[in-house]
Image 1 (tube, rainbow, N blue to C red):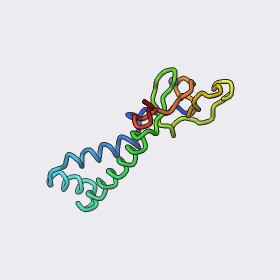
Image 2: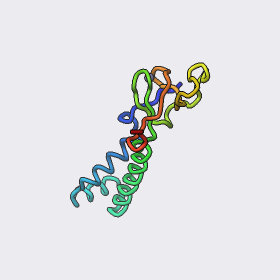
Image 3: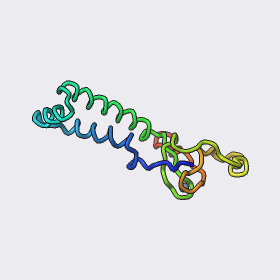
Image 4: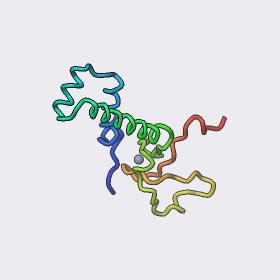
Length: 124
Ligand SMILES: [Zn+2]
């Protein structure tokens, strides 16, 4: 099994995040001109790239922060639900009647992972 990477190690998450954060903080006109010149593009295309990065970052945040995560019941590692294998060997021996259905197996230790509950879903 391919080991899933943590959020921090994933270029597909951190690169759009970095660009979106740079765009949010803002660059000086001189910095924008220098980057566009270095990339051999005009400044309007640079703004378009920052816009694409922000859209991608918002999509990732919606997917990863708004509840699509799963936690290993043994080592407590949190994974994107899409990054773990949903096939669970011997499922019926590992999950009893009435127990919550796991998302899959932890790529690190093989224990079962359960969805991370958000506050809005928690019962009082
Ligand atoms: Zn684990």
